[in-house]
Length: 154
Image (cartoon, rainbow, N blue to C red; front, side, top):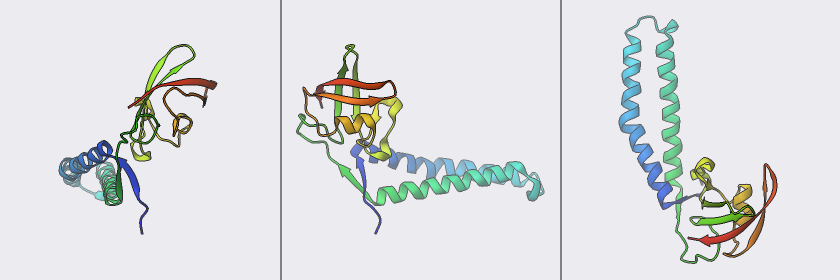
């Protein structure tokens, strides 16, 4: 039996949208590229054909991966309790310099650190996980240990 995959409602919707686009648009684009490349002649030395075939294989792999994820998905509902940090929450923190940052606690498949979407497995996420509004937490960062204050949880 496949392992259950946790997703937020938004993450599941995003994966469904990506799957739709891959199946309806991207698949047709690459199939067209393959047909065009076939017209160039000898397939054994046809770089354009080989590249298009490789892109199609990658695309089909991604489609299978998304389908498997969605088939085993369990949607994590946002908690009504905005006092404890959990998956699906937004956490506003302040460091000692006064800089405020809002982190979105998401599942592994939705992680996007450049947009402050972090998992509870990340250093910041694990330090914040199950903590309460008003708590001070120490977080190991590339710059060393930093202290943060949890200002709010949504």
